[in-house]
Figure 1 (cartoon, rainbow, N blue to C red):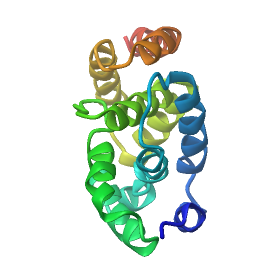
Figure 2 (cartoon, rainbow, N blue to C red):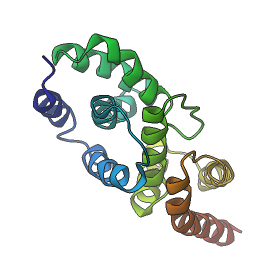
Figure 3 (cartoon, one colour):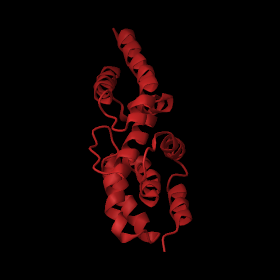
Figure 4 (tube, rainbow, N blue to C red):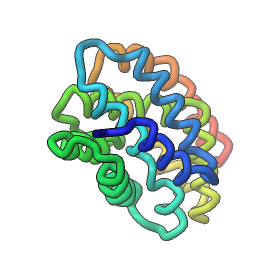
Length: 186
């Protein structure tokens, strides 16, 4: 039998030294309450929220792909907690499509995608991107170009109407940051 508390404990143990994921998970659950519109499988969404960024620290440490690292850890944790086997592929789909260019095919994946992006474009998402810029040791100009591309992609990235509405204000902040950075670098 699947034990939600055991999955939560495993995730908390994995992210205990992570500067971003713990708060991201909490904000993701808060965003879920704001954007859910219709029925969905709560076990799939619960597990997906906990696991979609679980590989963040490891991917940074070993210069790996975040999604692939998270998928690998998710498989391990889902197996250890006796998550229903018939739902594992659905959780993996949610994780696979949770990023900016994701193309979710289910209600659950759409929720996880949109709630993840809502957090990515807020103040803390901007701070996270800034910290990553420093860790990756890229130029400010390259960072600006990445943020400009992200800004363009974000305009069409949300799928649910509630998420689109919530994103409007956050996009203003994000785009203002990008424009100001561009002005300051001239």
